Image 1 (cartoon, rainbow, N blue to C red):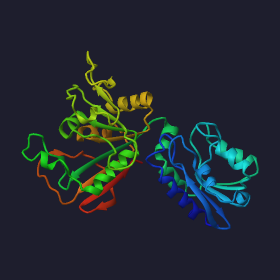
Image 2: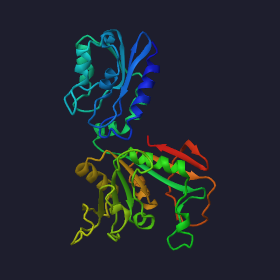
Image 3: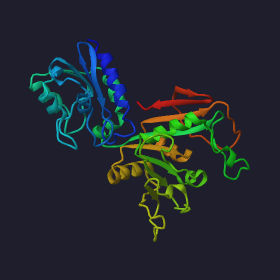
Image 4: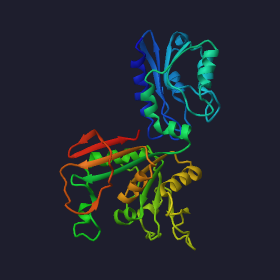
Amino acid sequence: MNHELYMKRCLELAAKGAENTLPNPMVGCVIVYKDSIVAEGYHQEYGGPHAEVNAINNLTDRSILPHCTVYVNLEPCSHFGKTPPCADMLLLLGVQKIVIAAKDPHALVAGNGIKKLEDAGVEVIVGVCSDEAMALNKVFYQVHQHHKPYITLKWAQTQDGFIGKHNSDSDFSEKKIITGKMAHRFAHQLRATCDAIVIGSNTARNDNPSLTTRLWPGINPLRVVVSKTLELPTDLNIFNQDAPTVIFTQQLPDENIYQVPIYAIDFTKNISSQIVEKLYSEHQIQHILVEGGSKLIETFYNEQNYHEIFQMINKNKFYISGVEAPHIKEAFKLVNEWDDDQLYQYIKK
């Protein structure tokens, strides 16, 4: 039996839950009988049934389960959370063989699901497509192994290295948008996989972004603005009701005119670490997307608070002058192209 083939299908299914599962991992499940897939499912949303449950619910004849092989990209849970333990359910239904891509790093599982199955006499195979499985759930592994959020840096730039024009330039308004529709949709898809977006005060004032996932299905993340002097107009889009917002500043104001949480940090020390720690401890944020501007992205980069970087370049746009793109000295890899736009990625080792 081609274990890798069926596990890759698990990973495809799991990825379908990318925008809706946080803080849970993405999990897919495939049930194989006589070398044919007879049922499959995936974890569709946080708090909903797990992948194994959905796959079994899609199985027409449960009596064949003892003769099936169950494939899952993450170790079945062994504890009661929002749903009962999947390991117990599989045992109750008489499953005799299960193939698992990777162990669950969650402290309440961490091999216990595998042990429970093995102790009951189930044949368990672990490690099929493990690298791919861990990469898919990189955020989940980062949080549960290191107790810190996963951090992505992202920006769009012209071919000659500018992320925008200065607001004093005559062509500032007409040159706000650098990339095309598909690249723009990718940016919103990326937002949908995160639970916090961080920008600086210049980006908030000059671009007035909404920081929502309006071009892609998903939950709007927490909006985070870093403003040392707290000079932010109250009518900015980040203060509308589309999503919650928090502010990081140097000194708490006497009066909070923004009606959102404001945190004071020391701008003479490691800025990014203070932001990350507060977002993790106070808001349980697991995946942070830093969108701009250049100075803030460079701060996270120089302070080594990041895990991956996405750089989008419109190869046919040239601004000659303007706001320079972040200075990042890493070997980026081209991972996608849409019309004039190229998407590059760097994953920190």
